[in-house]
Length: 238
Image (cartoon, rainbow, N blue to C red; front, side):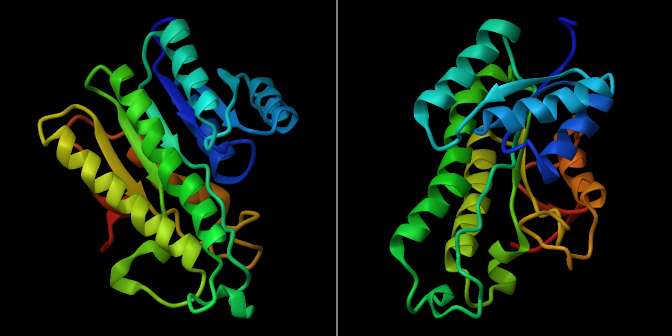
């Protein structure tokens, strides 16, 4: 369907990314489900296609430049544009808070580097590559976390915290440089504490509840906000 709007969701073969693909496809988007695990990604796509949804698989390692460029080229050649980018791929590489290595006093710098590569720099680079395909009317969602809020910063898990704080800065810088009159809107979204593999079974929210704020930010109207930090569609402090 050539007139369908196009969305790419990264890290999407399970959890929040998978449900985001489902919800966007239900709203009429042609969705590319991005994942670095080929078999798992294709299985996820097959399940969504069985629901009658327009979803296809994009093999994507967000930390690999060749993979990122391949995605850009595919979007350009097949669709000629992209309307939504959801930077959902992320890792939580820190040890448990009970582990001494989870303290910033003993944190391993390589662990911090891995967090920044996946959680921050990959999102930044995908913005650089895909904004030119948005024709001044795209939506970008950087899936962040309350653990990256400077206004409520605690100790431990520094790799994850610092990478998400930096991701929020990426959101702010892009929004400022694009300008208030741009039709491209970019926002950070904290989905809340969600029962995913990362969030654990004791989390407060279901996956369906967690994605609501992501989908809200991905489908903002023309007069919607840009350069903000939101949870469940409501602004939260940086």
